[in-house]
Image (cartoon, rainbow, N blue to C red; front, top):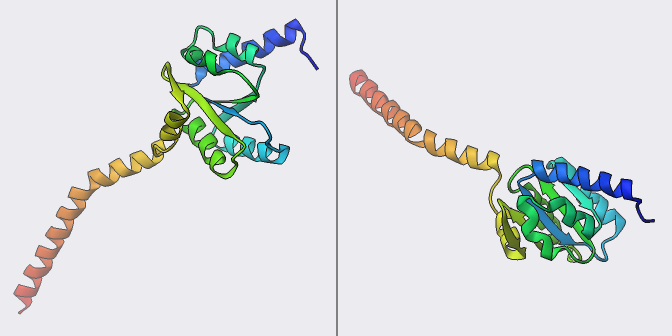
Length: 166
């Protein structure tokens, strides 16, 4: 069923709004994936605040025109699923993790900060730890010297207490 002109304009407007809010776009070919697998992918994406869309490529090209994602316009051919996320790595992570378990989902590329990404670059982006993990690691590094100092002082106080008791 084809869309009439007003429906196409509505789709382009909706995707343009989505593009304006997003930091990352990942494009993957989904040829041969079952509906059940696609539904599981959508559920995982929703949990990570990633928007998945199956769009006509011509409408997608119109929506990304003039945005930071325009660099991927030449990659928009074939049956594609578009993954948008406000988080820099969420879209790449969701698609890459799903592609590991489902060989029919083929990552074609994407865009991040106005730069086109190939499939390998998307996988590298997906391998970056999440913001929460990076913050936890940073906090651990910041706490490490303080906790070591506290342990040394506690050991000294314990030694001093044993020396006075003897």
